[in-house]
Length: 270
Image (tube, rainbow, N blue to C red):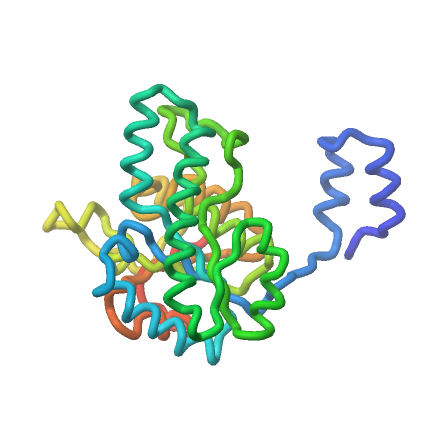
């Protein structure tokens, strides 16, 4: 049963924001999904965009076709250029917050390029402030492009080890899907999904079609296909309880995944 608004307000005024009774009351408040019919697609920077025309053009064509039947929020990864920046900035001993800003600049460049490629179809790229206009874009053309890097900047939470920002474009796209209450989160990469080892270097790697967050951590696979924090975000999410990783270099995979097919690897919260 939803918490009475007056009761919740009274608790908020009287208690610490970490008070157990207040936390429980807020948790019991009725949920509201902002964009329940939309799907977030994360287009990998290194896995797709950095490959250039051969990889990007077919995917753009598929997205343009798919948006006739689906509402799409298309997030972009940062890729190789961001890794180069990270290596230089880390060598200069700059903190994670500065590296976060550098990575965001590259993800934004990729969003601009992808937006320009789809501009003739009415699909635009928006910056972080422009996310407030996403419902209008979806109502008009069923799709919008955004930079996948979350706007933490100098407020980036430092990693336990090193200075590479732990919340990057995988996490940023998931957070958009969760906060908008979207129905699905699809990661478009250059592999069929999750394997027991890196399939690019280990011939014995075995494909894993479905796995839970707990199973991934138990097997030591928590950082093998998605950024580590995504798993914790998935485990605590209210709306998005699974994500799917697909191979975007295979024509038709995205269309099938949007239709609800199990195409690649599905990672579940439980």
